[in-house]
Image 1: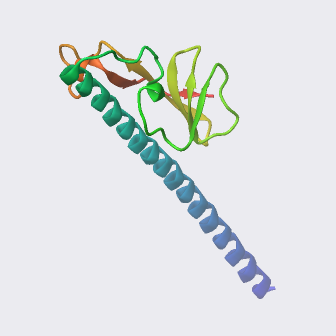
Image 2: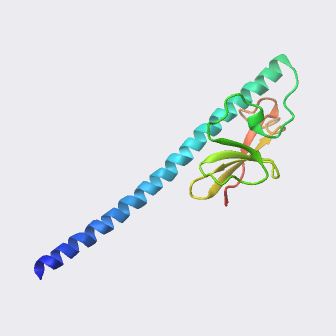
Image 3: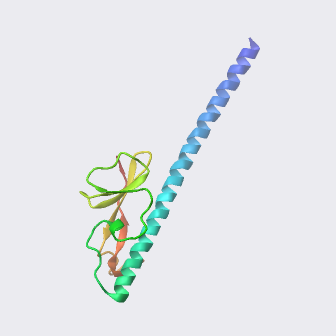
Length: 142
């Protein structure tokens, strides 16, 4: 009888520890996904600045598209294109044509949304040559 109680107690303790570890791993996965998305945003912004600086230095026309992915050469590998409907796959980028927003859809269902700005930074923005910038909007649940 005592052995059964000890065994049950050990099973309960291991189960609780397993749940705590699983929750910690999920938080770490979410943090890693956010960090990866932020790295990709930084790369997109750097490429947008390169286009804007080239325009300011050498002239020429800027792209007319409101999709920042049309402005850059090196798109993220998980970019799924432009459409009016969000793709089923999570953990990737798409351009919402209706809202004119670049969207990253996280695995947990929420999305980070960005808008290409052509007039931001003319007076007060840093890192936005010629007013070109990628502005983060409020996150949303899908």
